[in-house]
Length: 545
Image 1: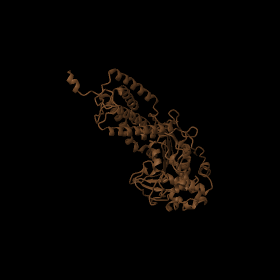
Image 2: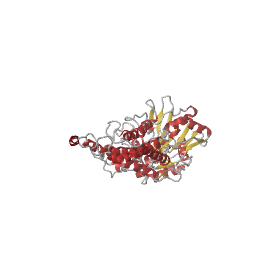
Image 3: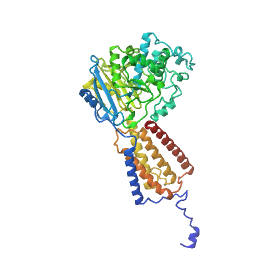
Image 4: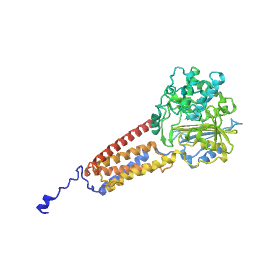
């Protein structure tokens, strides 16, 4: 090179310059070998210690005929069962009960007819029975209004003040699932799989600012049923737990049914799906709707038999008050109204739902779902079925319908409605973020926009991958995926981050085409990842600590 060349050639930026745009050198083989070792170790640790892992039941034991029917109807969907306890009996011989069970309460302890489960909305039938019993005694009347029962409340909406006990008991009050104004808070808790009523306004207090929609249609409402229970307690100058114990549970000998914010002795651990723990719902203010309530299959068999033969207090609650009701819009699969199709006719007693199918078959039932439990009490004119499971994904209503039919009951062939979407999202997040991170480390450029590797991209993609891995431990679906799926993805992320550490000193801080845009996207993506990481870690802590 001549001296003139030296004078005219522009200086080359050092490799560590913040604005260097050249492609960084490839990581040597020894670094990739180290990354492989780190990835394998991370995958093994994830396989051994990651909290979410599929642990479905592998079989059903008990009375031979019932156990065989349960296994046949569940079929491949036994992957939805963490623990399951089932009973079936002929109504003309309620002492001859068939029992069956499978899976575990906590990963190791078998469940049985005396194992306590969260009841979910099955508790509503006890609240309905309490109303019927009090009406029969003359303690209240179906047309009593909230304004009459709570004269000290200053209702913002006069339509709420005029709601009657009958309207609440038949889901025609117009009240929503939660008090007006609590929707966003409840939605956030739901996304984290935390009990959505934990942060909701207490039901009676929530009446002040709540508004009521049309009372012409069926609108399933936990808020309304919680208010109903407290209204009955106010009529009797008592509390709901004391009143339901005195009037319904003690007369029936249902000693293992209770309202409790604590898991009772021997009670199951709750799971969203087998292996994915969640916390029990503990908002006792919403107990009349089925929150913080526990029971056993044995107790619910007692209940079903006594309701059918008319000896239960408030057994008249099963009688139809509203014929062929119509729904307001789409009905969630978790609600009792989701148990039929468009040609199924639904009528209502006090909480009890009556379905008449196109083939003329009729059933009376109520199901229940919280994030760690699925329950059903169901009977037709010949037999009754009671089942309780400690996983949300269990298709309890479909299983109960099949068991009522016995040998002719149709097997469950599809996952519950929400599972395919969540499963697709789980696969997407297991594959796409790790692939993008690995591609960045291998090619030293982003896979899609082809921008060069820099420190900002190392941080944002690595942090984003870790956040999505933690999210999948809370929001993923694992029962239909191989058990190695998460460990492999986590190992790939760990390996890519290892290579990123080697690149750190060899790449610029920022190498975007438009610096302001790159920095803005980096800040937003980092904040999103940190927020996701923090909220999911909190949700996991709530479930497991």
